[in-house]
Image (cartoon, rainbow, N blue to C red; front, side, top):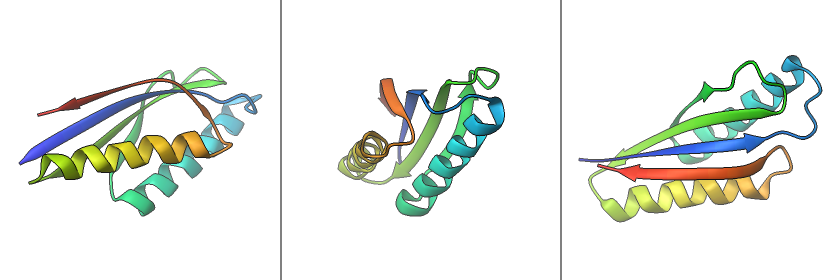
Length: 93
């Protein structure tokens, strides 16, 4: 079994309150869960208005499958107008 994690640092320029940020994060998490069947959570910076760090996890028996899934997740987030990716890290076990 291959497990891959991705830590995505986001900047949310439109958020002017925690409520606005949570709305964006919830929408993004729901879209990623439904589209790519990954586990996702906000793991850091919960109290900052315009920044967030998401943790994404996927697993498979095939290394190329987990690599492709996380690449699609990153590409999807980059393609939305909800948030801007500042940095991301991928680890595979």
